[in-house]
Length: 200
Image (cartoon, rainbow, N blue to C red; front, side):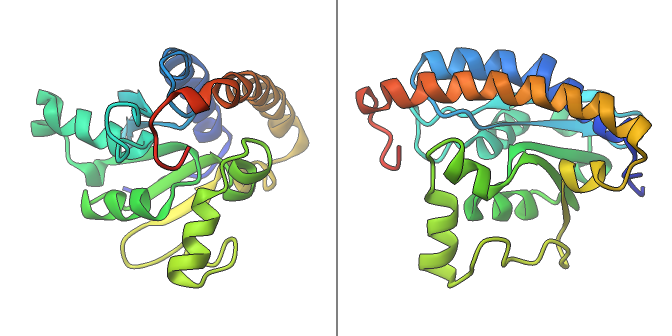
């Protein structure tokens, strides 16, 4: 099923970030975890299948996306829903491990709000870009956003294609979401030395 990259999609993905992922992330950050999270939605009606957040204090591999997949496959819903029929939403552009996990799980897409550069510049978490550069020799944005496994899109790429009347309320909501994440980032940064996450 084709995913229509339009205002209705962006509105729904922003709503899921604001109402479903962010509350989980607020709890996660209070426990010492990073600000990353994700959600799965049905392509057919954009209904939420599951939302999750980073849980690296339990296991450094439980990035927001991988922890979401772990929880999905531990839940009965995974027996009833095919990943090919779902949208993968990531709050932040996935790292190389998470991109690979999304492919291995059979998703043909992912959408993200914050870019790798945002993670580095706004969240003081440069590991995604450093991994791309050091391990794969890729500059920012250097991976194939459309490939044999999935197609990826930043929400702001879609917003840039919309008429102003459709885009403005979504940009207002995006600003509200950015502000909440900025506060969470500050909380994480102020306490990260107290956790045992290897790449904090």
